[in-house]
Length: 157
Image 1 (cartoon, helix red, strand yellow):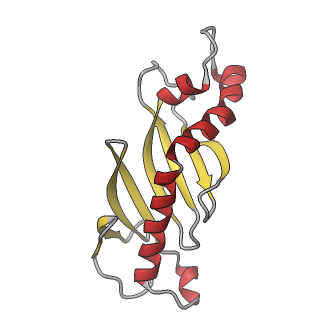
Image 2 (cartoon, rainbow, N blue to C red):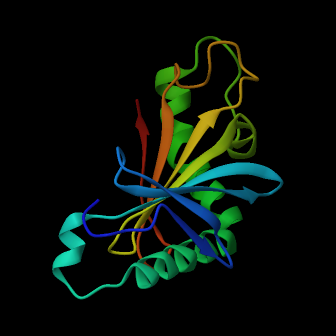
């Protein structure tokens, strides 16, 4: 561990977080729209150069989760508009073109990663409706600023 960190951390919003040495992060699970969603709060060793307590870092994670919850539907809209053209021009075979809502119906939220500087990422996976997946098994990665604005939407994996 970068510093002497407890093996678990209880937070009123995030629940029980468990230290994962391999990931250098606290891991937990939340519910978004009735679905389980993994959460990871990365304890960036470089962030410890500044005076920052573990409580501050975890509270910053809770703030990021709150912002993501508030902008959840907008997040789906940005992903749909960002990837729709790419899907239709690159990944779609001979089937009909998708609309933004239809594309998003194929994706399910998988995890949220929160970094020490307050930025976050939300990963989405294909929910298995479409045989073979929309993007050939790639995940959709949405990068968010500290303020919860979408910075980038890309494919990963």
